[in-house]
Length: 379
Ligand SMILES: *[C@@H]1O[C@H](CO)[C@@H](O)[C@H](O)[C@H]1NC(C)=O
Ligand SMILES: *[C@@H]1O[C@H](CO)[C@@H](O)[C@H](O)[C@H]1NC(C)=O
Ligand SMILES: *[C@@H]1O[C@H](CO)[C@@H](O)[C@H](O)[C@H]1NC(C)=O
Ligand SMILES: *[C@@H]1O[C@H](CO)[C@@H](O)[C@H](O)[C@H]1NC(C)=O
Ligand SMILES: *[C@@H]1O[C@H](CO)[C@@H](O)[C@H](O)[C@H]1NC(C)=O
Ligand SMILES: *[C@@H]1O[C@H](CO)[C@@H](O)[C@H](O)[C@H]1NC(C)=O
Ligand SMILES: *[C@@H]1O[C@H](CO)[C@@H](O)[C@H](O)[C@H]1NC(C)=O
Ligand SMILES: *[C@@H]1O[C@H](CO)[C@@H](O)[C@H](O)[C@H]1NC(C)=O
Ligand SMILES: *[C@@H]1O[C@H](CO)[C@@H](O)[C@H](O)[C@H]1NC(C)=O
Ligand SMILES: *[C@@H]1O[C@H](CO)[C@@H](O)[C@H](O)[C@H]1NC(C)=O
Ligand SMILES: *[C@@H]1O[C@H](CO)[C@@H](O)[C@H](O)[C@H]1NC(C)=O
Image (cartoon, rainbow, N blue to C red; front, top):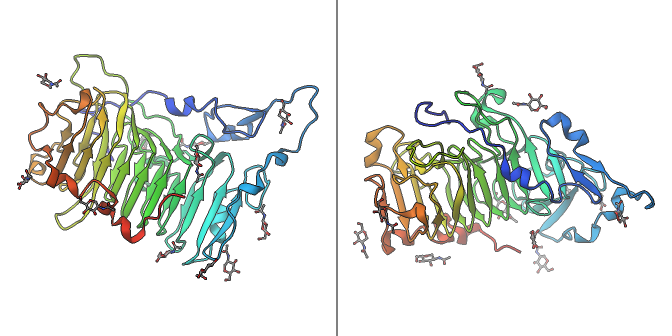
């Protein structure tokens, strides 16, 4: 999404959460992690430390074959390891061998490591699971921007068009340079989800502007970590986010300044006939900056927050009509039993709703995304 330069300031903070992963397990044992400043540095991403008197061990000796999910008559497993310890060294190469329209689930098991690749799951490849080893251990990372890819929609590090996609314990990142004030075309999506019936369990989404393109279809996110600055969850999907952390990377704003420099959501519902919207239940909002809960990217934008705690980074008005007062009549922005300094609704935009029990009910569980038709329990 394009930034209104006078209303928003661009973000200059570093990807703090990415840095905080530094001490974690992105590398095989006995290696230290260096944060890549660019993709070309990936070759030196992990540097090996061998203790002088410990003999050099084959890196695949640590490879835990026994934790690969066994094949069943309803699922098969493909294995990805960037060190070449199993059949595929890239995620895309595994996706490429999945049979079109497979009714069997294909579990793509991805070992620890950073996979520097731009990945696409085309519409023909359905029922794929990406199984990582933890959101701090396994990541798919690329660095396209709107400029470098021909538009925001094409900048994603992972694009999912196939239906029935599942991701577990893995992160998706866009590490393009953080936009400087006034930059255009710096939007950098980490993931685009355009397949119907997708579920994300324990996943991380890292970026700044436009991190999570929750584009279309019915989606479910549980216990995910989502980081960004401007419109960092945007699109026209119908999605339920449960127990997620929503972390703003917007620059800190000095106390007393009314400046707003970010927004959690920019939902893109176009008309009254569309059954789309974002529902956040039991989430936490924190981080830095002075941001909105949402702004009306399209006239019928629909977003609700329930049982969600919000720090004082949420600006008192909470919501914005994208500077189009006509949208005040058509957006649906609601809050229900939220807490924290940011949840004070006294000074909210006049069209923001304080939902009652009846209004909130349809948003609060997996029925909102027709989960009974497709959402499998986490196992
Ligand atoms: C890692 O280091 C430990 C002891 O420091 C050693 O026992 C182990 O074999 C090493 N593993 C690899 C893969 O080098
Ligand atoms: C992505 O990284 C590569 C390698 O470092 C660099 O050449 C390219 O310019 C970067 N792309 C963007 C959009 O920053
Ligand atoms: C898969 O195997 C189970 C028994 O292990 C059996 O009950 C089931 O009918 C099989 N499903 C298919 C689709 O073959
Ligand atoms: C590699 O693929 C072969 C043939 O499909 C399979 O038998 C083998 O188990 C795979 N190895 C690993 C480590 O996934
Ligand atoms: C694709 O289908 C063929 C034929 O049914 C089967 O032998 C093969 O294992 C399938 N490939 C994968 C990756 O499931
Ligand atoms: C595979 O996907 C189709 C539709 O894309 C769906 O009907 C079917 O239930 C899926 N199978 C599994 C095992 O998820
Ligand atoms: C996901 O990771 C958590 C810890 O990070 C672990 O407890 C859980 O078993 C993992 N689940 C799967 C399906 O990988
Ligand atoms: C994107 O491209 C436009 C036109 O070529 C250029 O003016 C702008 O500086 C570029 N933005 C970034 C972030 O590189
Ligand atoms: C909510 O905000 C209003 C206006 O700033 C203030 O008067 C009121 O004390 C706040 N309520 C709470 C519970 O903090
Ligand atoms: C909830 O709000 C709706 C819309 O304003 C109203 O029609 C309904 O009577 C309210 N229900 C309750 C239980 O207050
Ligand atoms: C979700 O909540 C609605 C309204 O309270 C209820 O009718 C429905 O049974 C619930 N669905 C599930 C899956 O719990």
